[in-house]
Amino acid sequence: MSGGTSKRAKRQLVEDLYYQIVAQARQPIFYRDYLVPDTINGRFDMIILLTALIVRRLRSEIQSDEARTLADGLFEVLFADMDRSLREMGVGDIRVGKKVKAMAQAYYGRSQAYDDALDGKEPLEAALARNLYGDPSTAEAQGGGVPPVHALADYIRNTVTSLETHPFEALMAGDPGISAPPEPRQAL
Image (cartoon, rainbow, N blue to C red; front, side):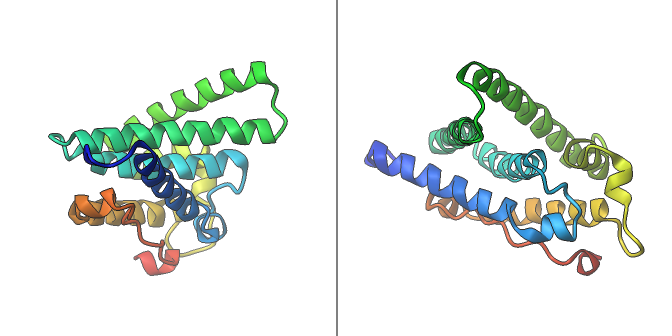
């Protein structure tokens, strides 16, 4: 996204990166095996979680205007997509603005909670149970093995570690560097 890159090419890069994040967030394994609620809110929360991880990685490039531009672009595309989705679901114009504002607040709150957890200020499992599952007892509901919230936390930690070494140039080329989640029982 250097100065020589056209506005249209920059926008296309941001959209491509965002839609790869969305595709990852829609993987059935999250809803089937990790027991993330398979609802509009659950899917939105998965998109927020994965977007927050990419933005965290971009923020590590503190000297890069390109990283800031890409992070800002991801936020803009995310909420343009949410606006479009709400309208497609039949939400009226007056309510769309209020709902998008609430979604933006949710993004910032959850993103901060995940950052705090990844920085060791609270267990990541607690942040996931509260923000992604909504009810910690739901996050623990599994008949044996590792509860999904613990397996998901392991996946998130591994993703963050992988992103730390993911080349910035690859991000700038549209590769988010997020791998598919393992089966929860394999996450041990």
